[in-house]
Image 1 (tube, rainbow, N blue to C red):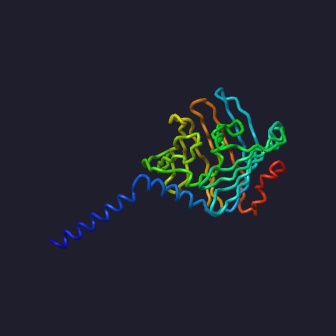
Image 2: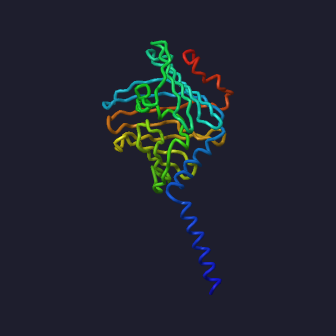
Image 3: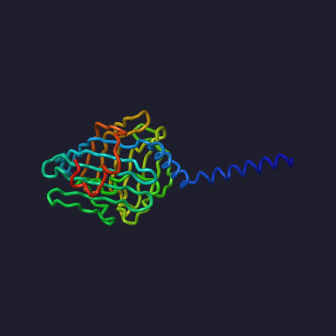
Amino acid sequence: MKLYYTVLLVFIGLFSVQAQAESPEDKGLQIATEADRRDQGFGDSIATMQMVLRNKRGDESNREVRVRTLEVENDGDKSLSIFDAPADIKGTAFLTFSHINKPDDQWLYLPALKRVKRIASKNKSGPFMGSEFAYEDISSDEVDKYTYRYLRDETFEGTDCFVVERDPVDENSGYTRQVVWYDMTEYRPQKIDYYDRKNELLKTLTFHEYQQYLDKYWRGMRYEMVNHQTGKSTTLSWKEYTFRNGLTDRDFDKNTLKRAR
């Protein structure tokens, strides 16, 4: 009988430890960390992207963009977006230095003014080049930018997903919280709901047509961002991805941003 109670107490203790480890906060962080881990090691990438802006009437305007990304060890990624069309914004360039534990650095070169404009932290909730993506949406999703809470398992468009709430740490964020659907197989984001400073649903981003590169890295080839409050939307269509192109910090120099080609 004494042995029975000993075994029972050990079992209860192990169950308690497991229950404590699987708190919603811990599980949410574990999911986000695993999603980040699976995308590490790509080095750099180059891609072309078509940006389609739609107003609430359905009228469209198109933009052609080249995007370069550099993975940075022990910090956030660096990215450079260069606009090739239409003619009135050709040569516009946007540079982001994402960070893990401090606000991102961002600069926008406007060829019409021939000057580089720094994007202040308090302005990063503003629209990026008239799209439904905010400046803060353009930065890489570093794990430490948020706190997390696992909500539930749920199927989204036929895919089994973990649903995780993440709250931005940056007090200047335009969002109170975001809800992310990660697929259970590859931990790829399938959908993100964004809630504004009044905690009302503002936008939804969905990811489509995932393709795998280098037998490991997944990239969504089409992003759909819908603004529920304005009726506007933006589609980003990606193509011509190449990886490990030999890019270095010199390719992401803010002092030569206006000469980006």
